[in-house]
Image 1 (cartoon, rainbow, N blue to C red):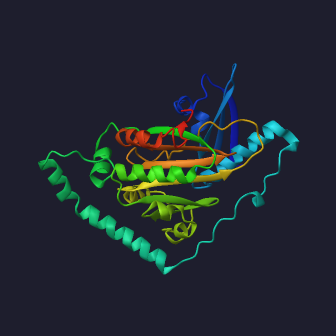
Image 2: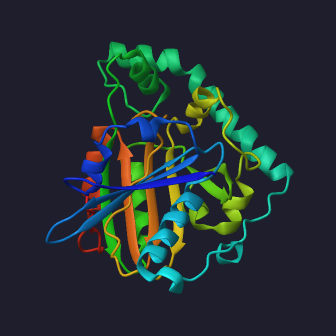
Image 3: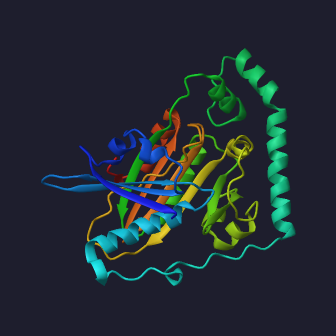
Length: 311
């Protein structure tokens, strides 16, 4: 009742081609919260790309992806596929109210208010000195929304064999500094079927399980309808980091790329994302072209083990 799936043949099953496929009646109909679109490219080297459409009011994206990975096991192994129960999923960490979390939220709001108060003076100074407006500051977001031709985000994908997640975070943090996102990171923490959002000042806090727990901003729950523009404010001068975790499944297909995006968020939201499937680290970045090109030069480090994903 909550999941629909279909299989179809497409001319090309790379991520970029599948992303360009139009949203047909099946994709856009609000019948179920999760839709799994299995796109097959048949030929000498068959390929599969699965487009997952998830309504976050009902289910989180990580759980939706787990459903797809288990379906691949069932398609290949049939009755021999391992059962999927709640015990296969890691327990969600307990969320508890604390004054430290309240203090972190108040500090974040204070920085936000100060940044917005300086907005007109900063904008006037940049106008007088003919400086460019950076995309990921309040002025940049305002300019984006006042432009009728909204600039679409760019996405670049990477892949690495083995456990290079820590290296990926270090490279992402280097990218964050390079593009001037000085306020740190926003991150998501999974509480299936919902998520909570937090803020981290440094990559060290982002990597620490305890620090992530302490820096959550709100209890887990479904997104508030009509609050999207308010949530945008938290991404001024911050980078979103979305880690989909580590997953091990019994299918022979080799994961080649992973792409993530929020349909309601503009290109001015700078993001890095990653998932590990059967030992393959699949990761990527999204944002405005200027930031993504800088990220490509920093993150596409062959010596560090990162190669291009199947875009």
